[in-house]
Amino acid sequence: MGNKNPFIDLAASFINLKQVEGYKYQEETDTLRRFNQFLSAKNIVEPSLPKEIMDEWCQQGLYESRKSMSNRISAIRQFCIYLASLGYEVYIPEAVKKAQNENFVPYIFSHDEIRRIFITIDNLPPGRRYNSDIVYPVLYRVLYGCGLRVGEALSLKIKDVDLIKGIITIHHSKYDKKRIVLMSQSLLVICREYSEKHLDGLPENNYFFRNKDGGKRHRGTIGQQFRNILWQSGIPYLGKGKGPRLHDLRHAFCCHSLKQMSDNGVDLYCALPVLSTYVGHASIAATERYLRLTQDIHTDIEAKMSELTDHVYPEVEYDDETD
Image 1 (cartoon, rainbow, N blue to C red):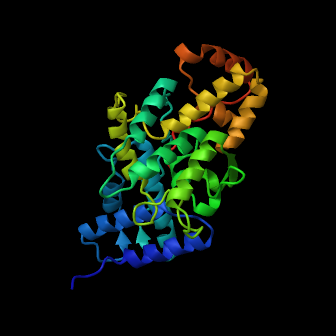
Image 2 (image 1 turned 135 degrees about the horizontal axis):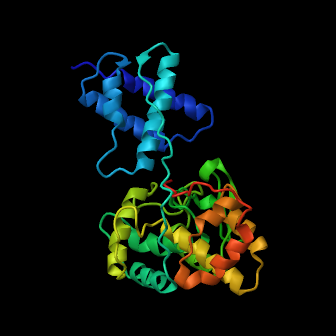
């Protein structure tokens, strides 16, 4: 047998330490796995990480966004700091500054595009590997109807969806927050029918949007299939960084909700904090920056929001949401 990469066991200890401290450490675990694959491919057998090896790892990938590169380097940087504290000779890479794409503008689906997406999803053929034809019609309606992040929806357990009161409980949202989300009556009916047909009798700790084998669905697979759904719905994909992305359903929910509240005469002083709390933003300022409303459809809302927020909130980096 060849010599083993000495950092595999050290990474396992580091991950265990972080999880004991209360961190979820899911995406970071995947990054550490890929880092160890990289080290093994480089035949690293000594417990040291020289600068040239770390510089190679930190190079931005051909199709990697600056934000993704920043997250990847940040995870390994923390691991290196841990190794240094144990006395190992390691080069600690610099953190990537200003990784957010400040020019990012979300794709806002029109109501007609949302309608076409649901027509496509409701007519998906049965899949050989995935039960997408069963899960997607409900999953997509929850994503758009409640403005959930994809990771939040896929992490839901049966016990987290109260089909009596119409309440969804998000236990570990972004920033590790817990929040309560109310469903509309129409969405509640859909979720009840789905549960009665496909979840009846299952333990409450099972995933609500379980895959065919009962496990957690992979967000990457859903994102890839979303491209096909867009194509079948007659909605062009504009390219990397331009979308539409699956997460843009959340953007559409925010914009459409704010527009509806404004049309119903709700004062934006009241609407913004309500929406901010509902979708789990860190601040009202984040909600205001989140809603890059299209001028041709929402000029009235944009004007009202400008009156409300000008000179009140400081400039903040836009949250392009990758979790």
